[in-house]
Image (tube, rainbow, N blue to C red):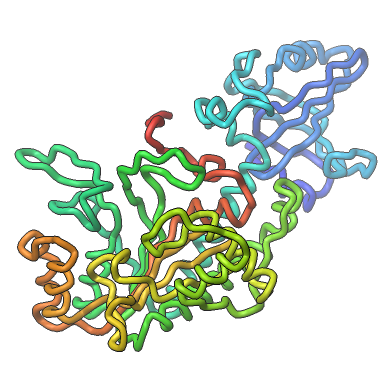
Length: 436
């Protein structure tokens, strides 16, 4: 039996018999000849069927085809530069309808994002979305390769927890036999446990859950987190060095493998950073933003979304960089486990990474000294007893360490200049969406 050939591999074959499989994109049913555009996961192909004596059954089948119908075709491949679609076509010899599609499709190119998400499996059939998730595959693979080549250990931390991993504010509480459990907001505590375990350098790409009733373009209740943690650092600058190099390597891989397809389907260029990412203390960044006309409405000393957009524009104008690190956040707006500066305990050894005007990551040097951790827990109004399992990680020695967490979908959104996370998430989860 002839083996299937994917469409992208046909160009390398000589003229002759082939077997292709895919779904119907369009049908042109003419008086003397029929044309079908067949798609598979790798591309599109023109099928041709001359209407002639003895081919009535094939002609009738083609006339009845609806968009999306799954086909198996055997026929003769012919290279012909006159064919606009790839310079080749297949003359149909036999046609098998594997699965017929309903003729009325529930979505169109101009359907709303919510309608398209209702029928996500159909929405994903487009070359544009195929390119998106191939780029995601390359992006995550390149990050894994970066860490693997540098002797990091990959971990898979649990997503069911007995106590909160960050704060009580954004927790999903679930029934766990005879007691409550919580879906993990972050692998933070277990990343730090790996440092006390002597693993040295670790990473994880896995699910994260946030009970955040937000409907913004960049928030989700479940997303894929990209996290790393490293031991024996001198400061948060070491973590920034690693993350900057990681982003450069991963973006270069995407640009090399998918740059042309992304330009075709998204109209944007994947830019590989050349200049060093500027590093600006947060309070200085706020002054820069204010000098450019932005007024902060809040008094918490954080950077608001418009401030992020403005500092992103500044970084591009002044440093030629789509990225900017905002460093040294006030302790008042950072978690208890962020290490503070020796010379100014009101500031932490932490940062946010902003890409194209949107924050994509938070990183820091962690506090590894038990007595300091306990004091900072109390200062935050928390009870050390409730975090006893976490504090145990530091009772028997812990190295100086730090790390970061990023949201994968948010990075894809910014890489491809998309308006929201829903466009770049395989199956989006938000306050109003649990299906499909």
